[in-house]
Length: 312
Length: 281
Image (cartoon, rainbow over all chains, first blue to last red; front, top):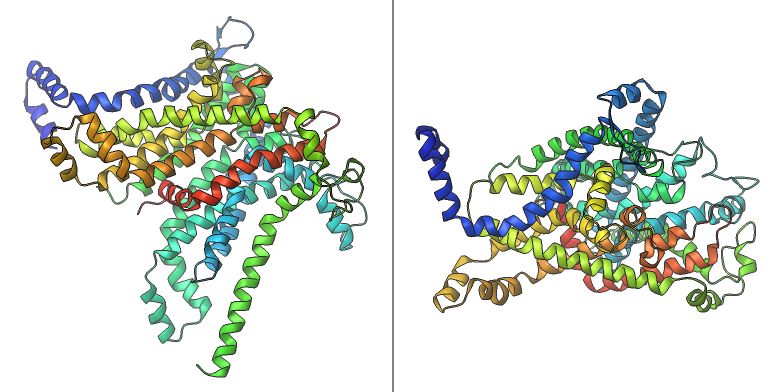
């Protein structure tokens, strides 16, 4: 703070001089962060600006002709039915996915918390789905849900729940559920591990005191575990929301956004329009809309993350 | 402990392990479906409804996969891409994290927070702009076309992980080394980095996995099939009309074996990395 005060008191000329002197004094510190900063500016910062610029142009990928069209892309997007359908499909994808991962993750974490035998084994085993390529998980689920040869149909037939095989991924009204299941399976381990870490940081005395007071298991969970776990759950679900919102590999591998675009989300549409169909300008406009969503998430995240204030 | 109490505690244990094993079974089911399918002969894999247990298990698919697919090439490419990403990320992250941990300078907070925001900016929403950058840099269809964006998106995690860890190493250690005449570089490589091993292992594991697993960058920036990684290779086997499920699942099993080995040895570090990435201590 004192530095900023010095700056405001100084005249313009010495302002500059002091600045130069300051940078020189700290040259090594700046030199060391420079490569990372420059790299991020080039690979992340510049594409952000480029995306904004492109969104104002009519720009087919296979030619170098760009025509300035102003906000036309945005106007057309907000006027189209596709956009609202995408919002709805993205929303249900995120809500169902995050809810599934959170609940299942919590269930696993609560059961792993105690002093159980073989904890390392269980922890490793539960972690594995998170670590393998999404594209591989996706093809495996595609195989499980195969209308003729899939395991899911075989099990359901055996249990007498269905009479003939159903094709989940080929059916526009339920295909998204078939993809969400894969997404939940992939995302649950992260939640379980984060929740487990959170659970283990709860002071054991709280439970001992509650046990002496005769509190039942459910009450202990409701009045000790959940409140103590609140901030962990908040961070984890927020991160999960962001990751689910931008998840690409699973949907792309399982359905490619189909059938009849029923599993497409905003990011799938960005890819289809911008790169597959080569309409860079329109794809960029959709990206900017995606940025805005992420921006909101990012602000909430930073708020929660820096709530302590001075750990930087 | 009374008999009744003993019984109840036993019952609780049975219930606990019962739930755990049921949950584990649920999570392992896809692996079972994948693995058991690869043990079926060609005729059985296309049986409707599917047989839940292979009637005549054989490793035939594993013998065929080497000649019928490019699985070795894809695994090799995955290694090149993952190792490249790890090296590039660490070269950028270590100096930056060290500088932030040891110095107080104007712009540090901005730098660290911007890095955190980068993590929010998922690659897919940037893909259109990124496509421009990769093409302009002349990287299209080279390994770097995948390594460069992967490094950019793993850099935030690495900077924060290492920054947090560097701060816990006492400055006194470095000062006494300096008095003994060690250079800045010697202090970093001989004293600081060896002490940072746990964080480094977590960083490397996270970055390696990230680069190994990603389909998007390879799908978008590599058209040369000789440079495909494992996810891209598996994806390329999904046919428009017909898919050779048996070979594809076999490639998948082979593609995840290196990861399973990694997990068995580095489980603690992976967990440390995951938790450090999301939850502050």
